[in-house]
Amino acid sequence: MSMVGVDCNLRNLTVGNDDQTRYYDTSETMRIAKVTTRIVSSLKRNDVRIRESVASKYGRRRSAKTRHVLHNATKEIVTVAVQKRTAIVLENIEGIRRLYQKGNGQGRKYRGRMNGWSFGEAQRQIEYKARWAGLPIIRLSRRETRGSSVTCPRCGERLQSDKRLERKLWCGKCRIVMDRDMVAAINLSRRGRVRFARSRPPIAEAQGRAVEAMKGNPTPTVIPGVDAPKPTSHTASSSNHHRLKLVLLSLSSRSLSPPERRRAQVRQI
Image 1 (tube, rainbow, N blue to C red):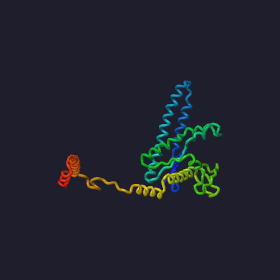
Image 2 (cartoon, rainbow, N blue to C red; image 1 turned 90 degrees about the vertical axis):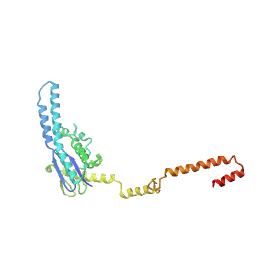
Image 3 (cartoon, rainbow, N blue to C red; image 1 turned 120 degrees about the vertical axis):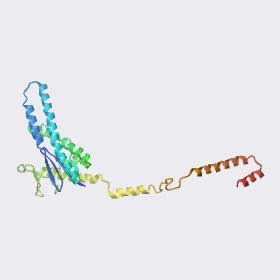
Image 4 (spheres, rainbow, N blue to C red; image 1 turned 180 degrees about the vertical axis):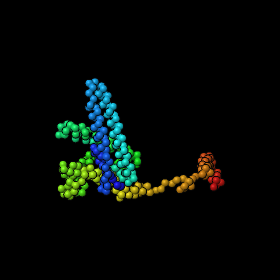
């Protein structure tokens, strides 16, 4: 089965594998967050309740607009996956907010921008839409996700970054330059393929279990009326009548003399 990896970023969703890579623009969510933050911070009222009410109202608007932008992007991702019949591989993003905590050597604005990003919303929408369409979803573990954006897809070496290349990375062994998001999507699709192959039982083992199941039941089940004649009511009544006659004969023969008993047996035969 073909796989595509989905790399969630601040400005786009990158979907791809070894054959093709697509970019779905979600930079509108950054503009929405920036405008909302500016409006809320410009409020100079001293009443805390009013400030909290305004912040809550604009926060709900921001969430609704962000979900709408991600809905359009994830809908197109799942539609293309359905057309090409590909499984979707999702990375593990648990604990990602710990990377942008205070004290990590990052600026306040950068931390605010990264922590304002809806990390799990895109994955949530992709997952439920894919399951609704009947597509397999493969969620990688943290161990399987580690290093997916800095590992060379060609040789497996660690890629190097350069400020002049912006979001592109280069490999010192292969001498290739690739986009960071493309590298992540390709590696995720490959690791998802490995996980999928490991989760399926081998063909020989499955065939062996089938043979053992056949050996465990060598005697076929007999179905009355199909594999064997079904007993009729006439046959059952005749058998009961004959059994009753034998019982009565044995009881009556106990009170007879030996000559009379022999004559009764001959008469019965």
